[in-house]
Image (cartoon, rainbow over all chains, first blue to last red; front, side, top):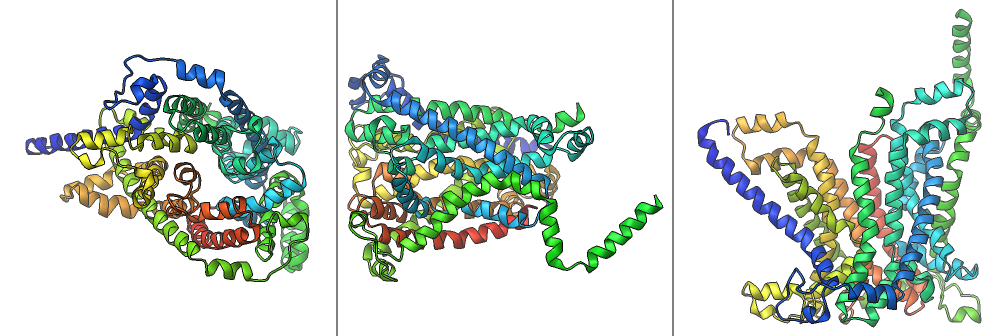
Length: 282
Length: 320
């Protein structure tokens, strides 16, 4: 662009960029659009030799059927219940832990942090067998408690490490001032550190939520009562029974995707913002 | 003031002479409250992850058929479960395809992740829209996207076969993607890669943004083209990040379960029975908890070898 001869090259560069961008967008978006499109189509437009992306006669029948005649609403509420409680528990436990790791240098700190990172990599298949036996002996199979306990623990490595990162960014001087003013350690934590790291907490909470919202293997293993199933398991069993009824299946899948779509949108904005910058400068 | 300095000197002297174990005890006492802060998290991790891990090791040495439990205590059988697995051809087949699956997923994810990151690093109008679109496959829950892709792969009415036959590949007109061994394997790889690329692309993009523009400009003046800039500047400068992403993806893809279970359940005829599915089926299909635990331990050791590499790399990158 600096000299006229490279004008050609710049044009070529933009052509390549836009072709690549179009391909990337198509592959990223098309399957999702196809899911939405199928969910609004009547059966007649699904089993056709010439499929269309925009339904000719869009209908809400699939959603009506899924919401009115199936267990999907129940599965959805179960998932919401488990995921919200998991998130709350995980954030409470993780923010305490992360504060301990961020503000104190105590013997055993580094090994504990490395262990937390390490357990995150464990294959769930290793844990699920003994945990299944324990849950069975405690009569916790077919309860949401079994999932709450498991999910909260599995989200801890991520939430502890994320929150530790956010807490590390908050200047210690702020707490030290509060301690001098007669605040207790716990008070400094709840009154100063937590409010300042609100965005970090929101971000970690969303990751915890999405982890619990997505989880399939434990939910399938620990729960087989229809009325207790969570969305991933419920959707799979629904799929087993209605294999070729793609329209209601896609409607259910869209409903399943909405919460994680909304939360992802929130994280995006929160992670983009500067974190402590405002608090210190302002 | 002078007093304080004196005290400091005295204390420093004492710290030098104090035996190590007493100073450790003192450090622990001094930081008592820190242990209270981390207690709930550590209790959870011990009770739900580390204790079960030990139990899994014990179970892997027992004949633990769950229906027998009602009658007798599961007996120890030494290494019999491991011997049975190592002489089981299905295990070797599963191990082989799991390694191939992992290798293919990681290679493709890294390749496309890097290409998309480089694309998003360019300045062009509409960049933001592309960046947001790229995230979409990551957002869809794994089970939902598996069912969605089953619909896309449908032999009679699936959109994939329609598109393929439209662009002239008539032999795909009703190709049963998930009912044939080879294509089912690749069909699942495509879905896993489709969902893994966004995370890798976003991480690499964040890495690319840290490379100062001046470096590229200097290279341009020296006549470097796109290819040279990528292979001689971007990739070497992101070497550590790329290695960490490769190791993380390897661990994730090695443990694959959800997409494979929903799309093929290890079929057709066991051809996509990766270790993750084989272990789960051994435990909760055949109810052979002992054999399944031994399988799980083999998976565990393999994953931990890779994890050790990962932690080592991370320690180099991050200060604790």
